[in-house]
Amino acid sequence: MESASHEKVGLLASWWVQLTAMPNMIACKVSEIAKNTKKLGQDDPRRVFHSLKVGFALTLVSLFYYYQPLYDNFGVSAMWAVMTVVVVFEFSVGATLGKGLNRALATLLAGALGIGAHHLASLSGQIGEPIVIGFFVFLQAATSTFIRFFPQIKARYDYGLLIFILTFSLISVSGFRDDEILELAHKRLATIFNGGSACVIISIVVCPVWAGEDLHNLIAANIENLGSFLEGFGDEYFKMLEDAESKDDKAFLQAYKSALNSKSSEESLANFARWEPGHGRFHFCHPWKQYLKVATLTRQCAYRIEALHSRLTADNKVSSEILNIIQESCTKLSLETGKALKELASAFKEMTKSPSPETHMAKAKAAAKSLRSLLKSGLWEDTELLEVMPAATVGSLLLDVVNCSEKIIESVNELAFLANFKTVEATVSSEKSQLGKLDTKEKNPNMDVVVTIAEAPSVLPENGKNVGSQQVEV
Image 1 (tube, rainbow, N blue to C red):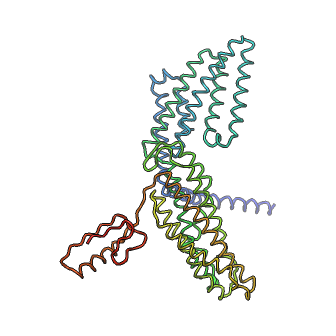
Image 2: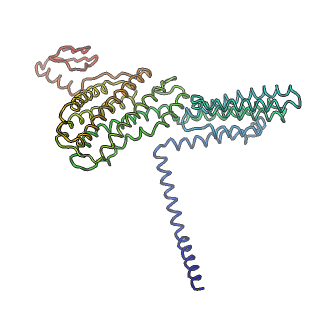
Image 3: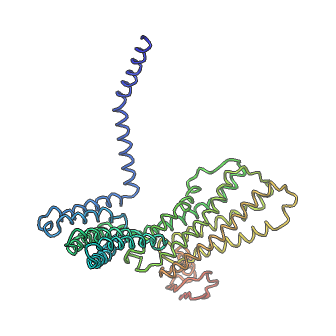
């Protein structure tokens, strides 16, 4: 009896402790939710505006149900406008427009075919009518469902086919019991059109979110992250070998991973961008497929960089002699490739064509040629294989990264040609221009100097001679 009473007391005590701690637990949970909500809104303020737009659209189309004259015209079918807003309104303009057009066209086509199927079924008599309707429903549902398996159809028109199956079945089957099928189809189509139109107009007019612009910025950021890693990899790797400590905790060494996990986002954004009208710097029929090609090459390069990143945490034992041989070439190659990708990302984001990436890439190729000759030389004959392998692996990966980076630059240049990016001409720096003016004025202080530069050459002129299309008038 005493043991049973002790157990009851202990159980009541634990319940009491949990009960008294519950207010603090609730307060902590509420505080955590508030912090997460605030962070979610700060990360992308467009989410807050999107939520407000959806609420406004739902309130607007609800007038079909609340306002008596509108309700008299549409009746219970007014609820289809509310349902359309719920399922059609998406975060970006392209997603909303794609869903809206899919729903409107599918409803229109399915409604027309449903009325036609009902008319044909009514000609077969009272007994044959349900059999014919059932046959048509089976035929269109089976055919439409199979068509949804095609990858190209599934990517852009899957929602439309789903609505087509639903609308055809509802109209053809309900027409069996309801003689006013034309009125039913008309009201349903009208309310769906009104709901979809409200979604599209609000999405475009009020704080629009363009999927094409998001895709453009995402790919530019991924290329820049690759460049940031390569720009600092050489120094970090050889410092790590000298200090025997891992330098893997720096942010720029982890940024490249964004390119590895963005495939699904890129494909969905490209799909939505195809639905969007021309806006800002993105004209109608923009080459969105080329963006996916650039993204694929960027991801392939990121996989090579991930292999390089693993060398920072590996247990490497490389002799100081080997380090002295390859350090300069590897560091130069990594640095110039990183600069090339960062310059490319900057120009790509501004939608301009710049010669800077090719300039850095030429230096990277020169360093790659030097590194390749070192790897092929006989300097490794007197060294143990285990000491050679880490250095040779890093060198081989860097050479592979150079090739991938060159393909990225070529692909971006092709995109720049297709999208008509603006060309940025090389310019002489203001500092050099001021030095030239001062030197001329020292020789003849009373002489006026006018410098006209039509296009700066890749190599500065020597002894005041004209090079290319540069003209200097003194």
